[in-house]
Image 1 (cartoon, rainbow, N blue to C red):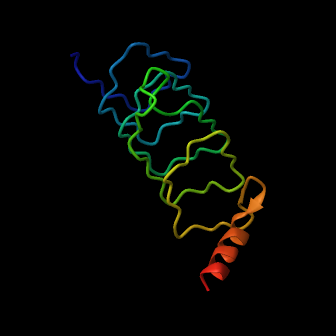
Image 2: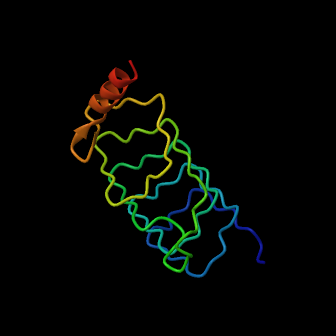
Image 3: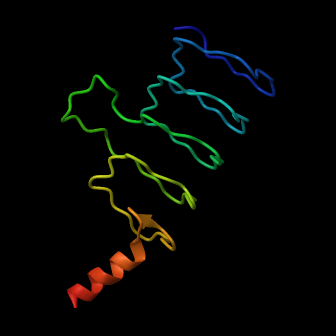
Length: 124
């Protein structure tokens, strides 16, 4: 293993890291607009105070070679602003949503607030 780098106030825009071990690396107050993370083992990251506007996440999970019955470890989203976001063709089985604003949120075109009200009415 090489010596850890300590880089501060440097412009390395356009740099490429290939086949690199960046485990335990800390990025603090860094501009990463337009960055591409592709074929990355991003297990156990901690992301705080990040702006993800316009971000695209696709093909997230264990990968195509994983056994069909394999499950990814749970991911936690807390204090996220996902308003007007779209989830399409995602596996949301066993997802729990609590203490969240859901005004205008729809699942297959049906307002979630209407579903909750109908459920409460059936429960009596």
